[in-house]
Image (cartoon, rainbow over all chains, first blue to last red):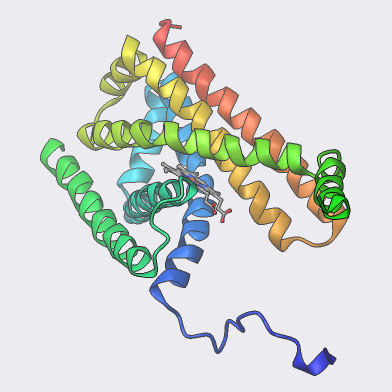
Amino acid sequence: MSADRRPLSPHLQIYKPQLTSVLSISHRATGVGLAAGLLLLTWWLLAAAAGPDSFAVVQDFLGSWLGYLILFGFSYALMFHLCNGVRHLFWDAGWGFELDTVYKSGWAVVIASVALTVLAWAIAIVSA
Amino acid sequence: MAGKTMQSMRNPLARVRGLGSAKEGVHHWWAQRLTAIALVPLTIWFVISIAGLAGVDHAGAVAWIGSAPVAVLLVLLIAAVYWHAQLGVQVVIEDYVHNEAVKLTALIALKFAAIALGVASIFAVLRLAFGG
Ligand code: HEM
């Protein structure tokens, strides 16, 4: 095959985004974001063990607008990655490869991740 | 019997079993799935619990973290999530970083950071559990 007739992989700038491709890259993006967010969990635990003063610093940060923004982003990323991760596990088991099932499970992930995030914040608001 | 055909089916498999990255790669894949399965119940439990703790003061957080079932679940969560996260980020680094020296440095930093932060987190939980 001559060099100019080789098949090309999707050229991302002109590749029309589809539910499947968007969810696929979002799984990776949320995975990396969540990994960075683990720093917050570790900080929170270390501060709790260190004492009331250190703990107050973390709680103040989490209660700021930036803290809420991070917590909200983290919670949605986690719910999305969780739901889509379960979808991945079903694929690994050999289930759900038919094209219409792939789209149905994809929309289910979108809806379930939004619903679970709303649920988590509803619990937080009621408890606060 | 087409002896020649049988041989051509056997030999590549016999050879490939001793080649390639099939062992290390499978182990990585399996550990990523195993930790993902463990994380399904652990994250659901954690998110519900932490949402219920919104606005908690220090004494309340310490009492929660240090109580027996919570401390055990937190240690399991920390181990599973740091293991899963570093396996995942490793793949991302391998996919996007092409300079061998930079890649190796990034992978070493990733593994050291994951172990250090994971152990520090577990230590904090145990310290509260044993009332240190
Ligand atoms: C805070 C928690 C989590 C973090 C930090 C995290 C992080 C990551 C990262 C960085 C990746 C690599 C993404 C890639 O290679 O493109 C990944 C992949 C994966 N995660 Fe998670 N994850 C978390 C929770 C979960 C949960 C709860 C599940 C539940 C099912 C899950 C299931 C998966 C699966 C199945 C993959 C492999 C996807 C693939 O084959 O491309 N993860 N995760």
